[in-house]
Every structure is written in C-alpha cells, then in structure tokens.
Length: 369
Image (tube, rainbow, N blue to C red; front, top):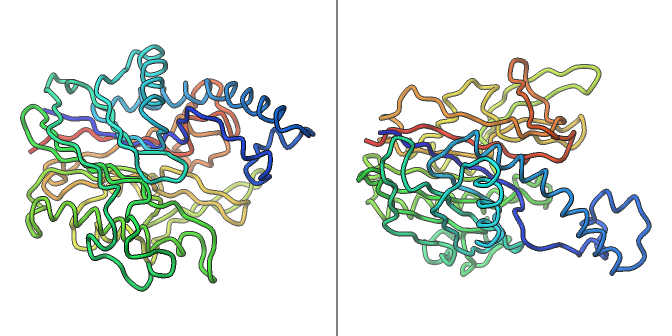
C-alpha cells in the first residue's frame, strides 16, 4: 500500500484585491508604477484588471504543478480562505486537469494577511486504500506560555502570551487503508527585515526556532517523549529556513558556477540534531535539493530548500532508499538551474511571471508501516 504525500506553497491564492499600493509605493505593482495614476478610483480599477488578467495564467500553472505532483494528500500554504480553495480546486484542478480533491480542510490562522495552511485529500489513494480523517486540530491559539517556550531572544520582539505560530500548526489524525498516520502542516515565520546588525534570516530565527520546538512538543505530548520514533507522522510545509544552500556565482552572459555550503545554524536543527525526524529531501544530491531561487542582484543569489517533508524515524526507515520528487516546471525563466537540472517549463511561463509559484512542490511515495 502506497501514499503520495506532497507540500506546496502556492503563493497568495486570494479572493480579494489589495489597494494599499495607491498610498504605499512599496506595495504598488511594478506595472502600475509605469503609469501616472492620480485618482484612487482609477488605481483600483487598474489594479483589479491587472490582477484578474494575470491570475488565470498563474493558476493554470499552479494547477499543472499540482497535477504533476499527483499526490493523494496535498499540504498547501498561502490560501486565503475555503472559498478560494474551493474555487481553485473546482475551476482549475478538476475542470482543467481532471485532478480534483473531494476532501478539503482549512482553519483560519494568525497571519496578518489572512493566508492560511490547508489540506486537500482524495477519498482513496491511487491503489484504492481509503483515506479517512479521524480528527483535526488547530494550534493557532497556543502561546509561548502554554508550552513554556519563552526566552530572552523571543522577548526582544514578542511577549510571553503571544501566539507561537505566526500562521498555524494544523494537526490531522488519519487512517490510510486502516493504518494510522498523523500529519502536521505548518508555514513558519517568514524572513523579515534586518534588525540590530542581523540579516532578515537571523533576526527572525528565534521565532521559527520556537515554532519548530512547539511542533516537536505537540508531537511528543501526543505520543509520549521518547516514543515518537515508533510512530508514523510527517511534518510538512514551508518552513522559511534552510540548513544548507547552493550559492549561484556569476551573472547572465558570463556564466555561473554553483557552490554548496552548510549553514552554521538553522531553526530546523530542532528536528534533525538528535534524529527526531528526517528531512527526506537530503537523500537527493547536494546541488539538487533546492525548492526556491533567491536573488537580490548578482551579489546575492542562491538556491535553497524552504519546503519540507519531515518523516518520523519509523516512517523514514520503512521507506529507506526512496527519493522525494521536486516539481520545478513551474519556475520562472529567471531561476538559474545547475547543469543537468533544466526542465521544460509550462506554456506561457514568463521570465519572472507568470509562474506556478516561486516555490516547488515536494512529493514522495510512502509505504506506511
């Protein structure tokens, strides 16, 4: 019996327009910046037309990436609400590629922009095993005080009664063909602006580390500390941190070289330092583990993994030798691929946009013990 499990940050699957760019130039789309727009009413009309015109191509590519992942259970990030999820699932996944999902789950979380984590599930796996939801729990309201996770680093930007998860940790208890499987879907704190001499990743790492510690505590409280290695669970989502990266050195026209390096610290060390869970993407070659291309000009460009399938030791061992897949066909043409990794992009993919997402779906076929 096999299960296809995937995670994908689809980026801003929204049902609303953002008109704040009229007064905040930093939030104004680059197309509208080319034109002189003096009236807020005209600006709103232009922004609506721009978003509607661009969204269809973008969501077609998002749907194609999901179809290529062909998952039985799909963990999603950056979903506005259930209405957005239902409209996308029916209008794109089902109508466009015939690859829909009957079971949909979303709980409103804490993100200030209103983007949530969600789960899509088939009623059966591809080989006919029933997928049943036994229970679902949101941990969005859990505070630092609740889990005794507050410390001096967090006190610089947070209060003890603040919520730990900046979006949520959505916990699902499932039966797959009668076998128990627990799923934890997350979207950790994004890397912010530099602060007090620290770059955006370092300045926000204490929050992500606390989120990772909270996920681990939730799992240990559920199964018992020291007993989790025998259970079947997976932690999936965009964790906005990495333990390694591939530096892309060079510029267009002159060529590139690629250098792998390990990071001195990561919030995700909470999962890996003692074997609590395995990041199965690390089974791939070092230059072929990335799920996102980051750039701020030729002096700062690298490939890194932000999207994860962490498996419990029992589940990882039961699937020893299996490799996860990374679907990169929806990447924009500006993404720089190491030699031998080039893919055929989806139709109408642009240099920077439209695109399926800046993130790549990660999917793995698992046998449950």
